Amino acid sequence: MKESVTNERQTAQNWSSRSLASRWKHEFFYLLIRFGGRWPAYLFSYVVVFCYVCFVPEVRRRSSHYIRRRFPAASSGAHWYHCWRLCQSLAISLIDKAAVGIRGPQEFTYSVEGLDTLQALRAEGRGLILLTSHTGPWQASMSGLSALDSPVHLMMLRAAGDVDSQYFEFQKRTNIHIIPVEDTMGSVIAVTSALKKNEIVAIMGDRIFPPTSYTASVDFLGQPALFPTAAYKIAKGTGAPVAMLLTRKIGHGHMELRVADAFRVTGTRGNDFSSYAQRVAQALEHYTKETPYQFYNFIDIWSSNDV
Amino acid sequence: MSDMKQQLKELLITELNLEDITLDEWEDDTPFFGEGLGLDSLDAVEIVVLVEKHYNVAIANAEEGKHALLNIITLTDFIKEKQTNA
Image 1 (cartoon, rainbow over the protein chains, first blue to last red):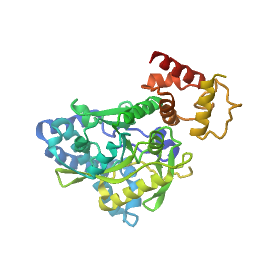
Image 2 (image 1 turned 135 degrees about the horizontal axis):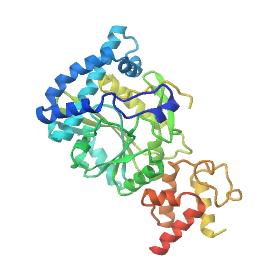
Image 3 (image 1 turned 90 degrees about the vertical axis):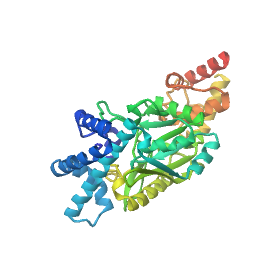
Image 4 (image 1 turned 45 degrees about the horizontal axis):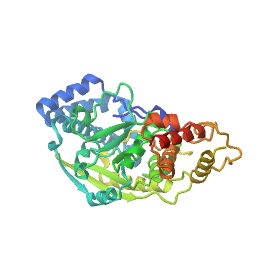
């Protein structure tokens, strides 16, 4: 589980990609997956997650930001249950990510709803900004984009000492490239260059990256929440179209990718991109209604909205 | 002031909606980012695109970007150098 903070300004600056679990715990699960497949890891994860939710208050606290808004009428018992379901689902998702990396994408089947939309947008030749979010198997499902036949550049913020390997780091066989956002100027040039080559840039639509001034307060699950708007600034500057991609795991072996929205950022003066952020928030809210336990943003994005 | 510097300033004022500065106020060594013009790194996207569109010069990597996008002098020099070597 990723760390969260309680203040918006701190959110972007203090959020860390570091996992709560130590390196050896990750390595243990990787070994299980490598030699036994996903199922032993799934089974063991139930024990681990139950212990974490019972005995580590921080786990419940981080889960509560979202659970309180998604299930506002839940009793304390129900609240605990929802936290456990969410954390267990996240654990399964992390195992799936590792399984795709270690054993290959054939571990799952994939479907892409809206593939023709993505192909049409790429045919425009201006690159494609893929707005992803912390929903479902968002990383592991990237394998499902192979039909687009394009390198995918992931903008990512990774903390020093992050031990949670990304699926494409297990084996050098994918066309996924990381653009580290810590180097802001470098990332901007890399993104612009990739889009110019008509390649795909994936940016998180629900996590704020530096520079932190690119945010909008929009309605999400009944309360104002802070969403990032940097992607729309890039889209405006480069003319690249934006497609919002939501992923979910169905059953034990299928990953669904769905284009929830697609648009161009035009006619916007200045840096007010709140209308686009609201579209994304609405799509995410709809997603959480359908799939409540596959929303893995553990940051309190509702905590401060004085932007 | 060289023509290119003047052109670039006019272009950036118009395209980036720089409302807090005029051509007369804009010193050549005013930094683009931070306390200078007050731009941020994402504004660099638009500058990179504008430079390529109007001068057919690509800022291809981070090193070039960090070197060229300091102020109007460095950007003009970068464009001229690229055009000369093209």
